[in-house]
View (cartoon, rainbow, N blue to C red):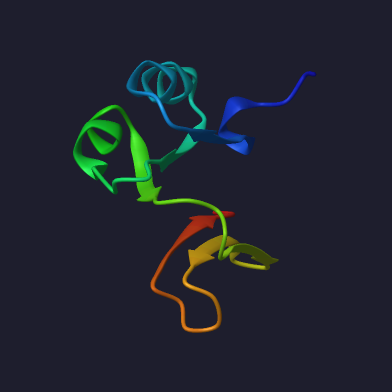
Length: 82
Protein backbone atom coordinates (compact mmCIF):
# COMPACT_ATOMS: atom_id res chain seq x y z
CA UNK A 1 0.00 0.00 0.00
CA UNK A 2 3.05 2.25 0.35
CA UNK A 3 1.69 4.25 3.32
CA UNK A 4 3.98 5.48 6.08
CA UNK A 5 3.04 3.80 9.39
CA UNK A 6 2.79 7.17 11.17
CA UNK A 7 -0.13 7.95 8.83
CA UNK A 8 -2.10 4.85 9.86
CA UNK A 9 -4.61 4.45 12.70
CA UNK A 10 -5.12 0.88 13.88
CA UNK A 11 -8.20 -0.16 15.91
CA UNK A 12 -7.21 -3.18 17.95
CA UNK A 13 -8.80 -5.33 20.65
CA UNK A 14 -5.85 -7.61 21.40
CA UNK A 15 -2.67 -6.84 23.28
CA UNK A 16 -0.49 -8.62 20.70
CA UNK A 17 -2.13 -6.69 17.86
CA UNK A 18 -1.67 -3.39 19.69
CA UNK A 19 1.99 -4.23 20.33
CA UNK A 20 2.58 -5.10 16.67
CA UNK A 21 0.86 -1.98 15.34
CA UNK A 22 2.66 0.24 17.84
CA UNK A 23 6.03 -1.37 17.02
CA UNK A 24 5.36 -0.67 13.34
CA UNK A 25 4.88 3.02 14.13
CA UNK A 26 1.10 3.26 13.72
CA UNK A 27 -1.26 5.06 16.10
CA UNK A 28 -3.22 2.43 18.04
CA UNK A 29 -6.77 2.85 19.34
CA UNK A 30 -7.74 0.11 21.76
CA UNK A 31 -11.22 -1.42 21.84
CA UNK A 32 -12.32 -3.30 24.95
CA UNK A 33 -15.96 -3.86 25.96
CA UNK A 34 -15.00 -4.01 29.64
CA UNK A 35 -12.95 -0.78 29.40
CA UNK A 36 -9.98 -2.60 30.86
CA UNK A 37 -7.63 -0.05 29.35
CA UNK A 38 -4.43 -0.97 31.19
CA UNK A 39 -3.13 -3.85 29.07
CA UNK A 40 -3.96 -2.16 25.75
CA UNK A 41 -2.43 1.15 26.83
CA UNK A 42 0.66 -0.68 28.07
CA UNK A 43 0.85 -2.33 24.64
CA UNK A 44 0.85 1.09 22.93
CA UNK A 45 -2.77 2.22 22.54
CA UNK A 46 -3.17 6.00 22.88
CA UNK A 47 -6.69 5.52 24.23
CA UNK A 48 -9.24 2.74 24.71
CA UNK A 49 -12.92 2.80 23.75
CA UNK A 50 -15.65 0.42 24.86
CA UNK A 51 -17.13 0.14 21.36
CA UNK A 52 -17.86 2.20 18.26
CA UNK A 53 -21.60 2.72 18.66
CA UNK A 54 -21.24 6.42 19.46
CA UNK A 55 -17.78 7.07 18.06
CA UNK A 56 -16.96 9.75 15.56
CA UNK A 57 -13.97 11.11 13.73
CA UNK A 58 -13.38 14.71 12.68
CA UNK A 59 -10.53 15.97 10.54
CA UNK A 60 -9.21 19.50 10.44
CA UNK A 61 -6.13 21.66 10.07
CA UNK A 62 -4.77 20.53 13.44
CA UNK A 63 -5.15 16.80 12.75
CA UNK A 64 -7.67 14.04 13.45
CA UNK A 65 -9.96 14.02 16.50
CA UNK A 66 -11.73 10.83 17.53
CA UNK A 67 -14.43 10.99 20.17
CA UNK A 68 -17.03 8.85 21.85
CA UNK A 69 -20.18 9.67 23.77
CA UNK A 70 -22.36 11.19 21.06
CA UNK A 71 -22.94 14.95 21.07
CA UNK A 72 -21.51 15.32 24.57
CA UNK A 73 -18.02 14.01 24.02
CA UNK A 74 -17.06 11.72 26.88
CA UNK A 75 -13.46 11.17 25.74
CA UNK A 76 -11.50 12.47 22.84
CA UNK A 77 -7.92 12.67 21.59
CA UNK A 78 -6.15 14.47 18.80
CA UNK A 79 -3.58 13.15 16.36
CA UNK A 80 -1.57 16.19 15.30
CA UNK A 81 -0.46 17.04 11.79
CA UNK A 82 2.73 18.58 13.20
